[in-house]
Figure 1 (tube, rainbow, N blue to C red):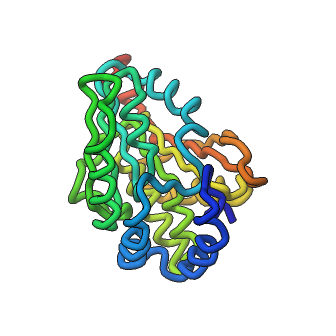
Figure 2 (figure 1 turned 90 degrees about the vertical axis):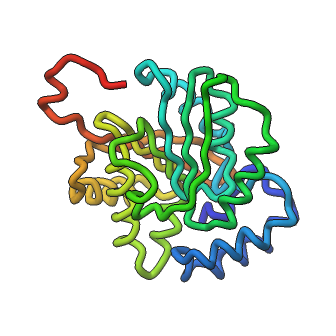
Length: 250
């Protein structure tokens, strides 16, 4: 599985990390599992990214952000851990970007806050980034629904799908991500799961969602270590009345 196929992984994180990850498979939906994981990584400096790093998808994400309506673009990164994805977009995006990085592990969130404090300033002076402790299946206590242009999920849905209670909780997470989107916004999922499996799952999850998901589109992110990674994009539908008004909400 691609959970061990991390771009730029050092030799010290190779086979030993894979053995450790596989031992977590039955409890990857538990907060204390990830608290322990990130606490054990405390001695290692820098970010930890599942699957791949920012550079692999920057060519997809930066043009997407540039194509959004004028004004600050709002981005939610769910299950962020200590990933560099949200921070690198915050640093490199030429337009104002408001990033909210969310994880249910307070250990991971505190570590990411320290990495943010040590990072260079953003490219745009009006950009900002916040780190929040919250559960990706229940974000209502942290954010208002319909607040974000884009929601990112890199590996969070995959970790839930690998658990005994997997598909149910993963479906709840997809529904919650769609609820966080503005009408016309997009959920980006980054995964190594084949489209034959992931697309039907996303279609089922969005079909049960009151927020109203649209069709799923797929792009290849690239191949790393012999594993093909995909970008799945699921939009939140614009209500017909809103679509006929001719205006664009910023």
